[in-house]
Length: 327
Length: 278
Image 1: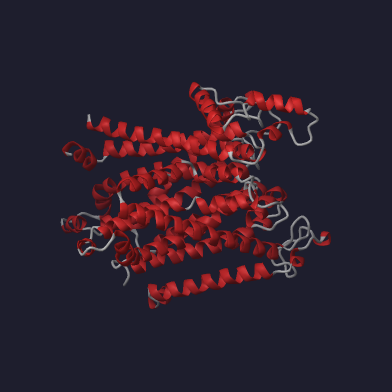
Image 2: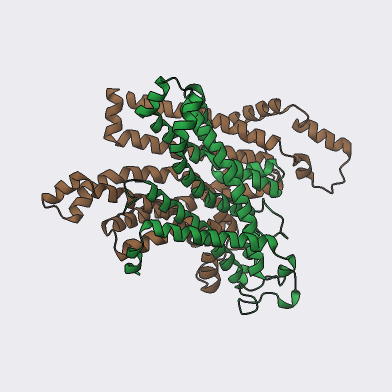
């Protein structure tokens, strides 16, 4: 019961925040000097003034912003997210299509960086002060400071251009119909972008796992365990892992927000047709409905990550469970 | 190498890093600001030269010298980074201290704002703000300056809350000091170290976000030298093997970001009594 209440409370808070995010996004877009009408018909259109006025009237551009927001929000809740100007398709379809490409990319990068980063962090902590530890630490610090798109460019120029092992971009071979693209080709095109994203996500989780494990290994109960004669692998498995696995998973879930920013950059480098490049296209072409749709969608995505982290914490951490029951 | 690092303690090392970072950044900034635009002028006779004696970083598709363009671009980035850090840190300090000292409704409001800003991916928020200001330099400047305060606000708030619970602060209240007095005399001086580290660590974030948003095409126009613009241009030529167009500008940027990260992390360790004397 308490657990339900906890999850319910978190969910409620997130819903209010989500509403606020959409108000904020709408306000930002509505204040823009970029005219959606000009974005739609182009600057050198021969359309008469009457026709322009008719479109503006039809779109409700002359209404006050509050009224426009309510109309947009009402339709949004009903499932009508508007029509994208740049793609000439419903926003929902565009986001759905694009996200199906991005989700594979993000999932691979996320799992790859999570497992490898965690293991590297544990390894570095166990060998604290050794050459390996120093290498891992320096490598992570460098990666932490490296811009995603730059690493992407270097990976591209080394593996795709120099060595020619991988394709230069896109999600499928050029000039092939969508239904003919095989799974193998999909994966082949996915490797470089997900590698870039994954490598960049690694540093955070590695440094975190390392730091935590070092803290735990220097605590008193570890000293006692050592006195009982446990060796290092027993120490790590019995006492270390249990204490760091959960916070590490939470950190990885909370990284959803950075992951979303990362795909926008990575997809732009590899010209991968995912949701990140749709965001860039929407922003650059003045495609207001799509921009709003992606903004709200990205917020939902981040909230989902945070919610999962919260639920995991509430479900798995015995201290939180007990604290709830007692309080 | 090992013996050398052992001889210098953290304090000396931090000083060396600070001097290094200062020389590097001030050098790039001054060189960039005072640079004659002729230095990276278009010259079609020398386009796509690989790095060599005449052009240390090579030249691009219009024969512009990459070294000069990069330095100029990085100096623009540094200016934006400094302004953004300054604005964001002032917002963060005011909001964090106010939230923790006044408490109650204001506290929940500040927390709510922080959650709101962190609820969207940072890059999406930057795109929206840049869109609101009609793209261009102004959009990047405002976007980067107005979106970097939430994390620092959290840090400042947590610190103030901790200090507020100390007996001497409670005693000051009992002695009849007002909230403002306590905040100024007893709380601010203790928050300052944490705050300064936060500002130093904020700077690389600001520069990186400036470069990212410019790279996506929302920032400065294509003729203007900026690291993001240069890298996004290099993207077009990378397929034909012009690797130097991407490698060197990135290294310059990376060096600036890393120096600040290292200083911030080391200062953190120095100011923490638990690890200050290692």
